[in-house]
Image (cartoon, rainbow, N blue to C red; front, side, top):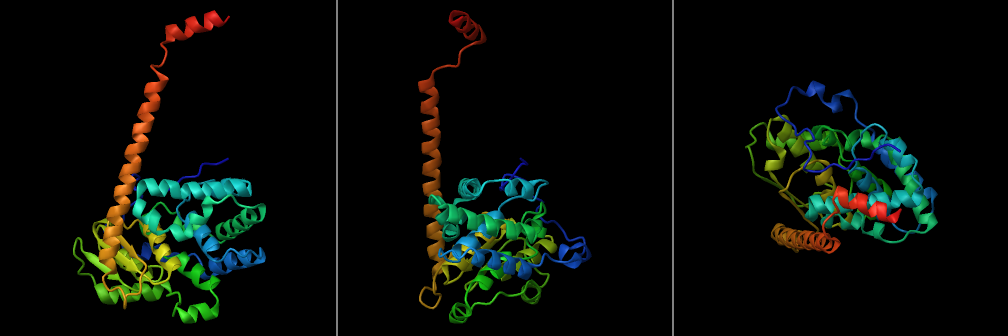
Length: 319
């Protein structure tokens, strides 16, 4: 089976430097069809007639978006039994919790269902969505080595709005903003006079399309995307969770805030998100310290490793 890799901040994933000209942008060579991808995911999910709600197929796409598009990834995923694939997707978020815990925690509505023991039918439905997303080219966009390529589009927004009923979209005033529109708005708003760092806030972010476009603009202008603070909020829990997942995929860095609040009722949602981030990081630090202490205790209880002479002597006695 081929190797499957998960992106992580410890890896140099091609942070965008000064622009060499948009003619080389993958967008100019033809985008991955996110609408087609969303339709394929929707058809695959509804064909399974599962009652688990749309958080499952959206969560599958979010989980796959954390994988690197290295040769053999699709083949390796396709060779896994549905139950094994389910556990792999669960481990994706375990790795993300180690790397950037607040984003993994904020993305929980998209992956907390992976902690259950799935029925054969549930595992099969997740596998069907996985194959549909891979066949539609998801990893070519979300798994690219260059972070700037990963910022070319946001499949989660298209998937979420496609899976939602028309009535639910109207009630939430929810509609996926095409990437080209988001990028035009970002250019009109930001221009080329971006500072080397700063804070950009989107209180009604949806799945983060405008932030994605702003990060892409900053990178094309030669700025370090990871030096900015990116704040995103949406009243819909799945949209807010998608912002957190996208922040990982788009490599927005360590200064990300994600809120899930009605901004009319909670205008200070960013302050709340900062407090949540501090609490999550403190819990993460405690868990890491406990794990290290437990590992050290196990090494002490196991005693020193035998020398080569001791090992040979023990083997001779056994004979």
